Image (cartoon, rainbow, N blue to C red; front, side, top):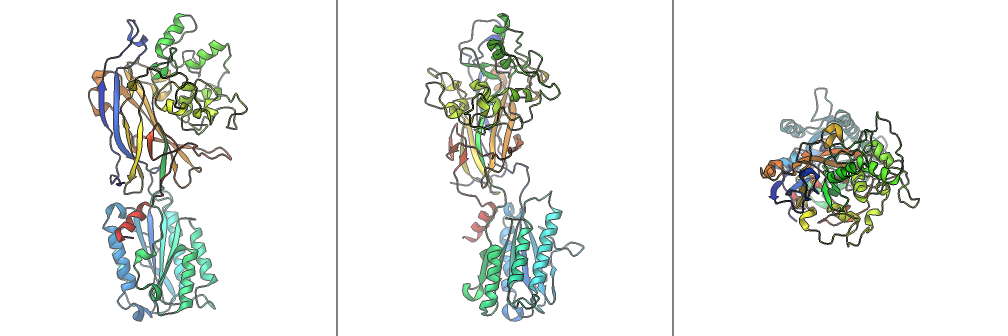
Length: 592
């Protein structure tokens, strides 16, 4: 599949299709109709999964080069060293999209020690992307060769270089990857009785790798005269360093790319559970979706009916009509069942810490009513937007399934609550009532959310296409943000649309998950919607906020559904080949 070369997130192209509302109840107040909708909004575009914290991982090459006197014979023109490194550097820097995430360091060793050829004002070895500094370092490699081959000094300064860089860039360049290329034509001269690379040198290599476990690799090259013990010592250093080894006597002349061991310039992430949801829609008493101006789970017309019947002072413009922290739907259920709602601490009750459409009080109201439920907890987690990790956030799961144990049940979305072929997950994702058959339901009254993996961009980030032809919006009442969750306030005829997906590291999906979400206001008025793209739905990292999902003690944050690389109403793990980002680009430059 062709890779996406666009490293920016595209603004979605929006087509707005207006049509007349059908089946409105005979009533003079437009907000007291079923709210069948006035506008369908179709969206399409492409977006890529960036680092959740917005930081880029750098690849840092460190060349540790022998400048001993014997090089006058083994490499008199510096072809194997300076010229070789320069050719590799030029190849990388000729690709700006790669080069901007690569830095360089050079260390020489000879005489009785080692010194940095790329350094700061205190002669401290550093990594740089400055062409002038790299050029000066390469020029230093072309200076007169002299003296011995002090491996210990070279490895010691290598350790210093990486340790110093880790300290200096911990916040600005976290998780940097280090590729060390150690080149020599001889045996070590500063390990005492160890006249070839042996236990002491191997220990020094291990100490370097410990500086940043899993993110440091060391390759070696031997280009001296035939000397099997010397070559074997360097080979073992590379094996311990999890890198590659080249011997000019057996492999012929080598290029630097022959010594590069794979890695990733950015953490590869995969997307799970992309879902679009109009928060100003709810399942009405007649089992169809209708307008819910305050996002409390009750349709406006049903709140008016309840008030007229004397059930309670329900207000379609107030999520908290009863002046506590419970939404009106929960109050309706309490009145219907004759149950009493537990008082909540007003200081914290209204907070929605994880942006899942339930506040702390409502999260505590969710209860595991069945000992056979799959999650070992009794209420919803107010710090995890998807407590049961099934791909549907807690608030949507509760307000569609109408079961306070649903956010805690990992298996309920696989069930069929009606006679439809699709399970509850697929029906919720397509904005259908999972507890009522869809007979006669028109396509334009559902969602047709689709997404597909389209390739990698230049940063190794996974990119996806997104399209949705049908997204129904309604003529709503204005709701003040003080009367609902803070992010759900809106003007008349505005609809608050939530679009979200779960993002996890490809290589360690059970370690960490991120909730990427965006609440966007779209018009329910056909004339307003006709203005075009400025009022349309947008998706992409620049529009999304990030919430880091904490893992409960002893519990992973893995998501249980598996998926294809494309699909409709799908969620779960994408089964795709591992990306190698900048390394893929580097290898493509050299054709291997």
